Amino acid sequence: MDSQSVYIPVELEDGSIINIEATPIGEQQVAFPTIPFKDIKASIVSVSKEISDAIKQVEPTKASVKFGFEVAFKEGELTALLVKGSGKANLEITLEWSKAEKKST
View 1 (tube, one colour):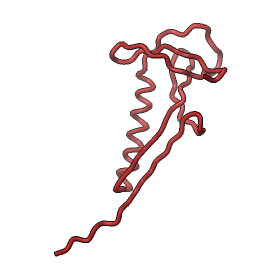
View 2 (view 1 turned 90 degrees about the horizontal axis):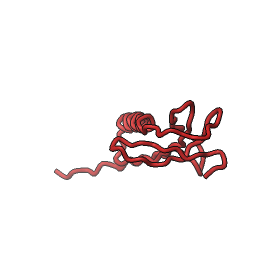
View 3 (view 1 turned 120 degrees about the horizontal axis):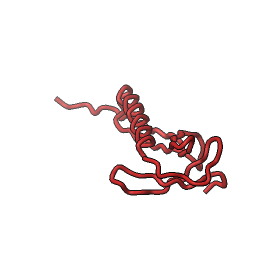
View 4 (view 1 turned 120 degrees about the vertical axis):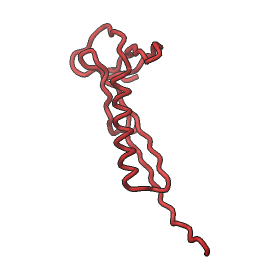
């Protein structure tokens, strides 16, 4: 864990609580309330849809996507940060096209 990072209790839709490592933005707080995961989930869904739309436009034969988020905490809310960096989050997209096989008639 980064020296500036904190663990924040996060509640999932089923009521389960997990701790997420987050980077405080702005003033740090000593105690953190349990935060719903919905904002991070919404970010993941939105980014996934955008990537999916882009992949559909270029029509590869095969595609794989790998991405991650750094989670930040600001003013009582979790924020997803899609950032560049090997130890943090990144976006990696692999697209493949294969030559169409000729059908014999």
